[in-house]
Image 1 (cartoon, rainbow, N blue to C red):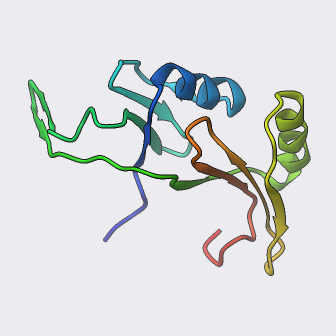
Image 2: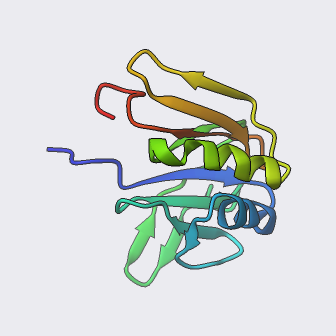
Image 3: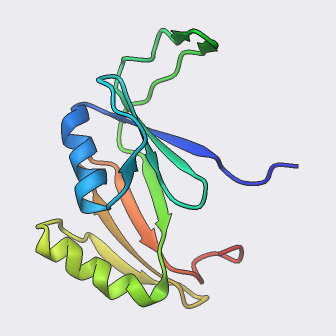
Length: 135
């Protein structure tokens, strides 16, 4: 049985710029830092992997094995779960940091979400409970 998504990856053009966004704007903690890969603790036992675009298209060899080739282009989407009681604080945090909120939605089950763009144009959503039947 699949229990949950463990990790997801985004591909970025400038690692330092992307790390600054996810660390400083979203408050995620880097688990390691490398010119090719930066993994973040995304809460709840999940990991966000930032890969430098093109740096993994040939795969990655490491002492314990190999990661098969992967890469991506164009804007992707990721959503982070946030508490409903903190939603307005997130909007204020974005405003204070000069991060434009593209849209704020209220969903049929009562959840709310806000969409912003990271420096590579990825759609980053912060969502409260009530967005999905499962959340």
